[in-house]
Length: 271
Image (cartoon, rainbow, N blue to C red; front, side, top):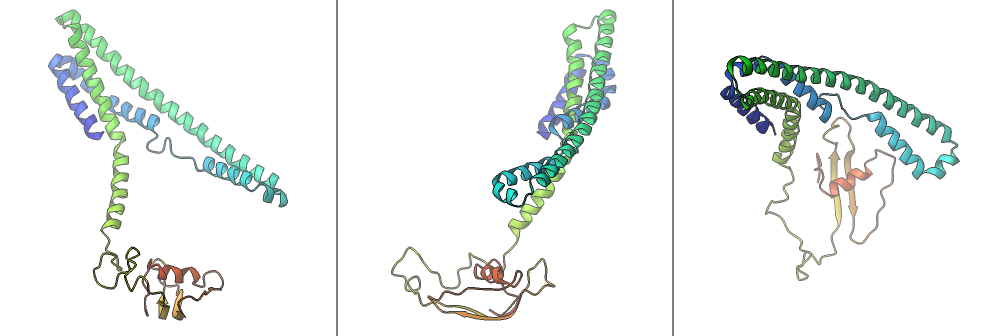
């Protein structure tokens, strides 16, 4: 889209000067105003640069209403109907207040952009009429000169409105490619080690049910919280066919044991 708008701007200026250099020069003086008007128009209609940002209050109100309907019996049992209603009304009124302010700001800037666009067109048509009267400029040439610069300026403005989106897209793409290029410490494509096949019933390893789970002196802390030791010297052996329950308080490492079994993480020590 950015390349298309830039090509439109360049082509429009060339067409305008080929039709009438004098009129094109006058219209070119209004190019900054028209570009600004085009950028504001794009921001208001598409919602860029904070004019149409997502309203968190509206989303929170929708979430509260949805949870209240889904858990109506619990809500009535706790006699929390009035509190939930008041919270919903507060979030709705907050959303209404935000949208009212945004509507005023959007309307003001949209009106200013319209004034700049129609003012530039009025100047172009007035000077075009002067050239038609004094120099015999053809009417179609006058339209080409005026509309060429006009559309070019709008294209430049709309392209400028996309600059923030391009920057955010590059930042997001950088994080994605960094994740894709990251080499995992546990390589699933490594050819070493034994492989169990669930399709070949003759495979001795696949049919071997005498496999036990062993944790031998395992130490582990999550990478994002290395200062919190979750497992310290864990020794656990689960024979084949035995059912074992892990019991303990929250944060004791129960889910961490299963995460290590699934190879989401590697232990810091032990095996």
